[in-house]
Amino acid sequence: MNATTHPLPPLAHWPYPRWIAHRGAGKLAPENTLAAFRLGASHGYRMFECDVKLSQDGVPFLLHDDTLQRTTNARARLGEGHSALGGDHPWGLLAQLDAGSWHSRAYAGEPLPTLDAVAAFCLRNHLFLNLELKPSPGTERHTGEVVARHVARLWQDEAVAPLLSSFDVEALEGARHAHAELPRGLLLESLWNGWLEAARALDCVAIICHHALWDSHSVAQAQAGGFRTLSYTVNDADEAQRLLDLGTDGLITDRVDAFSPD
Ligand code: G3P
Ligand code: MG
Image (cartoon, protein in one colour):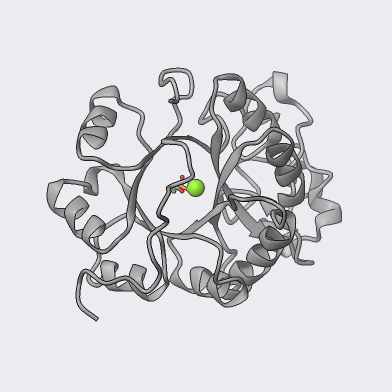
């Protein structure tokens, strides 16, 4: 296979909006909650990035960190001596946690959302999703498989499925194994050796880089491979313009209050 071939045809029509709200609404609301999605949507955003992992009993839910400490009241609720890992607890317990008070009093009581709840909100409001697979340690492939199965079921009647992305190659392999037809994106915080080949081997449609990694050379490499080019997390107007001038396809931002999505 030479450098310009691609195992899947690139999406002839890129169906996703250019601007994507990071974790729902960046830092303006508690990340990865439905309250954040509502706020992002109120700023005109039609696509949302969020982080998904599995509860102990296999329920996909939103949480960025491996542990519950930063963004929930787990320590107070569960007490010392309980595991801080989100993936160590059944959904029935996770559902009782407060994932809003850490942010501000206005969001006290906001729950952790399941992927099913996020899907209901997005489908009802015709919103697009970028689901970042954030597996708990040791569950990488399984997380990709389970999330892909849920997505295939939840979006079965829709023309456009969520973009599944991950820094974790095993998670993307799991997603591909379960539902190869779902679009995948490889997340990169550096351009490690073999990044293009890895994206190709995973049948990805997109490369999602830390924004500073994109320049005319890396964009040309990705585009020649047939990949769409997206960036995280773009919060500066000059940097956003640089990325748009480079011809990249998507910008994930915290600043839903600063950038008007088009
Ligand atoms: O998916 C893009 C971005 O969210 C990756 O970094 O740590 O914010 O999940 P992080
Ligand atoms: Mg993320």
